[in-house]
Length: 571
Image 1 (cartoon, rainbow, N blue to C red):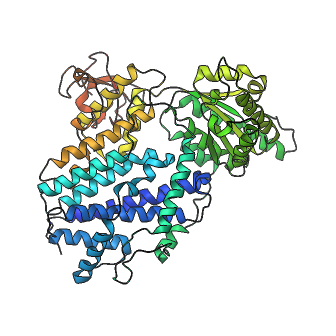
Image 2 (cartoon, one colour):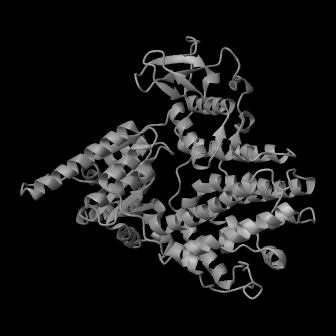
Image 3 (cartoon, rainbow, N blue to C red):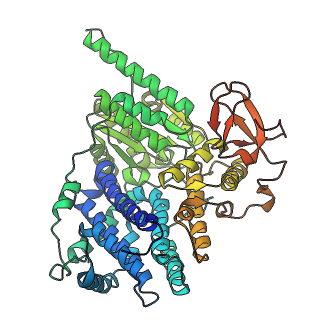
């Protein structure tokens, strides 16, 4: 047994390995469940492929770091035993462990870093998970490099090298690059998946715990354990209330939640009237979503699909995303068939057309765009029992689109406007990323998150990233944290989960924005949810439990807004 003062490091290693598998496997399941058009088949093979990539990644991280100083310590050997148990469900030790790791080293050296993280760069639905991948890689690197308590320079150098290589492969968008996601990227995503499959068929290296099985293989058979994981029962369908709860759990979007719940209540009432033999009120379920990027339009559309499925309005309730490029062809006579093909994919679900205003170019003749609109209108009417169409885009442009065609304005008369998130809501979104990835924040870090988001919010235009801005800030904080920790010789497991003030920094921002936590002029505006009492308190109370001076309710100040006045003393 290794000479660890506490079992926390091996335990954290094991948990992080599980997190890595969960990230890759759940990403494969996400693609199969919500983006079947990318996969072509839902037989679990793509999930197995993602599981293989997770195996390759954790092996390469472990081996690259352990080989950096040309020695294999007792603590590193114990981590290898934990790793083998994670990969193959067996505790391997002694000479067998030596043989397994030696073979794994040879096979791992043939794999590129890019091949193992490519899904999160090339497959659009997975790009939002880059922050989770960054977190896992940083933790694995630090745990292995500090297996003996102190990170030596050879190990620190390889950790920096791994982080630089992954940063170069994974696209981290600048904060001002908040243009709407391009649904045409789904075509590139499908190409990436097909390329991954071809490479898998040519042979993916997944070392086995015995010399006989340690070999390159093609179209490998899954192990019994993997078969159980891959063929596990599908998640149970949500009830209407469960889908509404999912909507309610989203941060902000108060007016949107009210509108969706009202529509749901109306549909429930119509079903009861039908059951009672009373006539229904026929309404169009097609909708227009307006709002800036990152305000939750696609997320809400997906939840509406779940609600409609639970109500029996739609058989599947799946969401198909597209834009002009998915509907309009380049040559005459091809646009109608192309639009109809996309509609066929969406039947029994929702067709979400982003940047729908681009279907009809402003101030120019656009026969192909008009053809797509007419084809879409016809199918929206003819298949209204099996299809819901949501047109989305910037408010002004969407209004022009609706006014350009009477058929659009009559069939798409339900409009939902998504307002920009407030700094308080954006801070809460940042907090959700932290909670999901098991990060804690110091009060100074919390304050800098609020200050950073408030500064950008006050200067926003319609290209402001909203939720994406919070996500990008979180991803950059992880990279900053990784760089900070790599310079420390000793580190505790707790430090791997704690974001500090200096980690919250992204892009050029005036230094005077970051007023220190201990500055007496730095105050936050706090609201007691129990009695709605408001009060300005010193920023040092961030993350601390306080008592409302009016109703005596106790609560923790997770997030707050920056106070504009000095206010009163802290409660």
